[in-house]
Each structure stands twice: as C-alpha cells, then as structure tokens.
Amino acid sequence: MAETPIRYILVADSHLPDEPAGTEEFFSMLDSLAGFASSLEKEKRPSLVFLGDIFELWIALPGYEKESHRRFLDWCKSHKNEFPVLFIEGNHEFFVSFLHRNSFTFCTANRIRENDAVFLHGDLVNLSDWKYRSLRVLLRNPVTALLLYLFAGFGGKALAEKVRTALKGTNLENKSALPRSFLEKRASSLFRKEGGTLISGHFHDGHVLCSKDGSRRICILPAWESQRGLVGLFSADGALSFRPWREVFLPREERSAP
Image 1 (cartoon, one colour):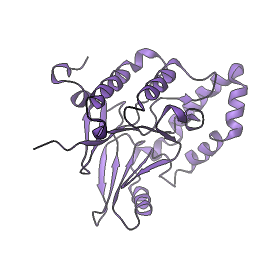
Image 2 (tube, rainbow, N blue to C red):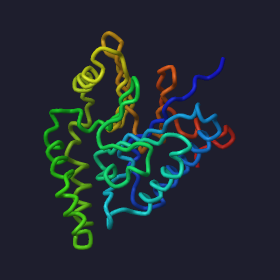
Image 3 (tube, rainbow, N blue to C red):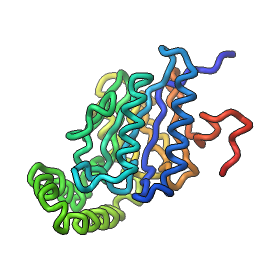
Image 4 (cartoon, one colour):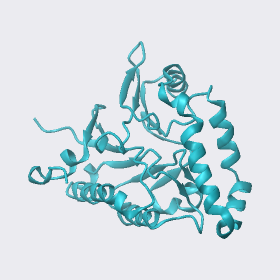
C-alpha cells in the first residue's frame, strides 16, 4: 500500500542559541529536509511550517540580529520556491513578520489558516495569563521597536537580554499546565460549523486532543529543543505523528545520532 503523502512538516520551539555551534544540528536538519522535499514531485512536496520560538531570542532589527538569524533567513529564502515555507512568530521573536516577510512564502505574527487546519504559536491561548499578555503589549509595538533601533549601540543589547530573561519567567507557571479549556474554546471559535485541526507550539510537550463530538482536534507540537529533535508530520489523510527528524529525512544508513 502506498504511503500517504505528508502535507505539512511542522517545527516548533527549537530555541536556538546565539552561538553557531549550538545551531549545527538544526541546520543539518533543514538541509536534509530540503533534500527530502526536493526528491518528491513538486505537487507532492509538503509545506514546512515553523510555529515559533525557533530562536531563544530574535529581535529582527539592525544591531540585534546574529549570524544564525541571517543563516536561517537565507535558507528559507533559497528554498521557498521549491516548497512552501511558512513562519509564525513565537513569543521569543520580534518584528520578523514586519521586516523579513519576503524571506518566506508566508510570515505572520498571528496565525495561519489553510483549509481545515489552523496553525498558531499558542502564547496567547491562555486568557488568564495576564502578566504575559501585558508584557507582550509593552514589547510588541512601533514605539518599542523604534527605541530598540535607536539604542542598539547604547545599551540596547543589555535591554535585549533583559527581555529574554523576562520571557523565561513571566508565563512559566501558566505554561507548565496545558490550558485545555482555553484551547477547546479557541478550536470551537475557529471551526464553528465544520471540523478542523488546531495546531500549536509553545507548550513543549506533544499532545493530541479531540472534542467530545470528534469533529475538532487540538495538536500541540513537542519542542524540538528538548524532545530529541522531534518534528510533526501532518499527512494528507489528516493523520498527525511526531518523529525524530533523522528518521524522516535521512536514508536509513545515515540515521545514527552524531
């Protein structure tokens, strides 16, 4: 029996560090993924969806971007015409969709809807997490972007480190427990009459939840950073699985871990 084609390849929460040495496995995965996708007939190539927090901190402004950010953008730009490359900002990424949208097939700070699937990062799902939601409003606005830009050479990098530290602690309590009721409400509002699948990152542990009537699914992607490089595979028949990237994109003889 022929294997069902992969419709989407999903990557979330890799939290790549600034130093290049900490990003090599991730970029090895991307190169292997590109080879895997390009080996397929063009109409059968899956879309690649990044669900945010790909970097531990990415402020997409001059003076803040690192070599790894530019390398990632170059990779996405060079492959977006071979297969769709979609990017959703996580809570550790700022102004990417404003300054770099042309590096992707589609880039947003909100959510992506494709047919019967909705993709989002997930940081805004928990409506009771008021501390984080207040911090997000404070950090993600044109005034803050302008101040960061103007002070990039005058203490701006120290401020960026404070931002990173604040993000680590602000919503840790709310993030440790999956806000199932809020996720179900979001799925219900997105798919009011028809069935569909809500796919989110942010919460780091993989989950697949179903509504009581079975018409709606909620899929939480495992964190690439801490879950052995797991990626999500959303097949054309609607099946979703989490698998180590080496098992998917590498020939069998090359799959041993480095």
